[in-house]
Image 1 (cartoon, rainbow, N blue to C red):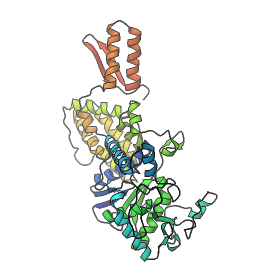
Image 2: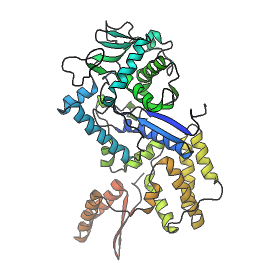
Image 3: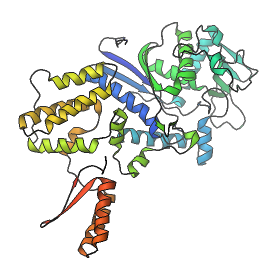
Image 4: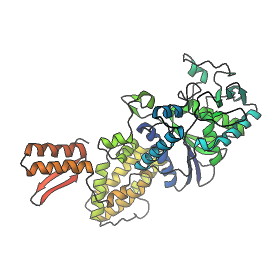
Length: 446
């Protein structure tokens, strides 16, 4: 295991490949940003200052992630009967809202590709001047033969091995089949075009991240993250063009997030049937339950109940343990062990066990540890401790129907609605001499 040592003492420069905002981001996309958020929170937990940059791709991302097909933004605009700017603004807003629902921290810088065309053009000019890129009839291409080891920095297979047996679109303008586009000359009907030294057109997807990351983090920075589908060609192309231009190492550490799979298949917009965070909420789950599931478990309701009860027992008192408690030490060691979140969550469960004991001193210490851990977990545990629990509009509607059925003597319907409240929402209803009471106990079987 390679220890993490930042380029500048006490500071971390971190870049995350952001979304292509032509459609709603599904929970598989959001999972990648959850992982990046835990990485950032862990750095900050250990006292490092993090400068996090995440781009918004609002032009240049071709449908096959290479150079064939049409721009995803054009597809989205055509489908919605809107302009690329309109759909970019709409889906960026929804993406930010979803991030906030999952307690994902905002990056320090969120640059849009369309705001950085001059930086991309300057980087392309630099590559042409150094002999790493050439002008062709349909745009500008990076010459992969000028960068030894292209495609193998992050991947065991060479580009030739990946292409073997695959259908490769013939492009007579390229010198080598693996050369990739830095700038594409405009075609009839292109919705997004800019002036350049090579005629009107638009940038390639790969050049965008190099230009934006180096502008805000420098020519060499600490960490770059993205989904495993970015390994090739996107990140290999970023490495090649960046290091060819600067003559310096591009990124010192890489984080690639595995796909979130549904029925053993990658979740993808192109296949349809993907799930959004709205779907998760419609199924009756708190979005933060998905965050906890992504970290390695699904137990948010129980955690909240335990913490709320402990907070009430201590009357809101929270006490930092003397020295470093063994459980806190276990939590920190798990994070330092290559972000071992399952072990970190096991330590969290131990702290929850202390919070459940009938000893206010132990509970006060346990609450401090849990709130400290939540700096990384991002589950709003302190807010859960102090929140006034209320029924949602949907829960209240079922609860009121059940009350009406009980009062009218329709006990079969009343019992059915009681069961629905428990199994659908995790709400247990009790009829007492003082009226009907309810409490959250978690969904049946959860």
